[in-house]
Length: 292
Image (cartoon, rainbow, N blue to C red):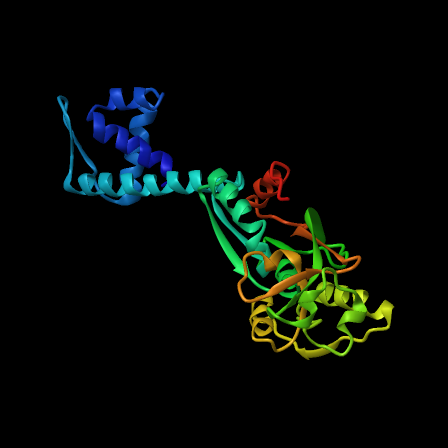
């Protein structure tokens, strides 16, 4: 038995006439009648009563009609859903991003993507750059918004915008009297910074700012997330060098630009060998967005 035989039977049940049902299925009556007979033989039950004047459904035929309709509806849904997923218009997309991306590019990307692809379930994961990289490699993430970082042969990169390193302190800190901060201004001060394991690009930018001037950063705390860093700075437990974009609208901190501030390119990354069709519409919309 296959879905064609179910469709033949439904046509017969709805017309109660072999000739009319055969015509609906674009067949002549003899092969159509054989298909119904074969279906009854395969099932081992009589589905219709035939007389010279009429065709009626048996109780078994009535039940098979209801079940066949349900099965075919599910089958048609499965075919439609498979096509939608293959076209990137259904399914799921997992997007990882750093904290400060949530304050910059993520809302606009999510707004546009969900409007463009309403049938795709978008899963958002706020995490660290290193975990984004690992998620892309092991397949738990389809795309990630993070720092450009090191080049990797299995990862493809799309530029979004360029952030810059800046200084944050508690309000009233002596450094707030300066308009621009040099590396020498940080000498001997306790620094709160993300660990090199969680965000190596950011940690390297801090080192690149300080060490050429002979200043060794005095790391005091190494939280995992930038939000925690800002709260510790607000409590006057140290200063921090962080991406400029995460300081916007944050209370209880004071931000200052750096002399020749290191650049922090922010990009979207995917696997080169990606197989999820829902990724391509995300890449397509990037060119239509002006972030800054």
